[in-house]
Length: 244
Image (tube, rainbow, N blue to C red; front, side, top):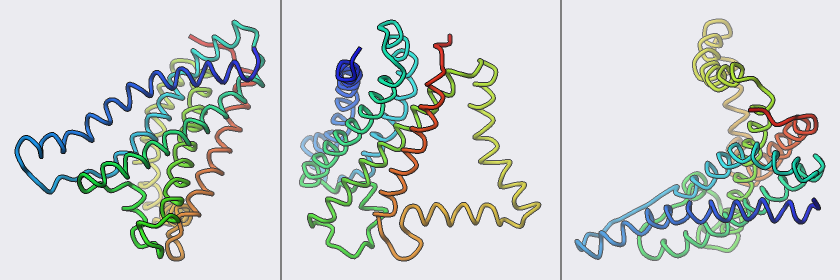
């Protein structure tokens, strides 16, 4: 199977599932309009809806990994072609969903108060919030965030495919517990919170809040982390077999 065929196969799957996803999103976004028309109420607002696009791409990358890999192997598709198709698909989906989210912001922002996650996080940025540059920053931030989490889903899917059922459960529950509870406890007990504070500063720097407010730091960080996760997922996929 050629790269173009593999790409179109995966993008068709995303379009089908994406249609269901956006039908739900538009139902949620139209709900304040319907309530206003029926009851004459005002002051409706929505915020951060586009973060669902990030979650959607991550979950979809995890859930489709095994099915796509099985189909590619049955059609004698090389691992190199599969890996390249995944990267191109995730980038195309991230850009496409970010464009749709910008359209939603423009459309529903004229109907009621509609704030994106980007506008809430970077409200103190020193450029006009209704300008073209702010829109460009918002698009880049959203698309790279979607790409990064899609790559996280690809990495998790590849990792879970290689692990046994027992190790999947250990990773699924053990890692969150260790990060949320065990690490802060040990850090406060043994290191006076130095590790947690350092992680916090690193995250603030990557998001562009360390020295002033600059969302381009986040754009570069999302892209860099996404490419790193893509590399790790690709290394796992190169020698992976489809597990049950």
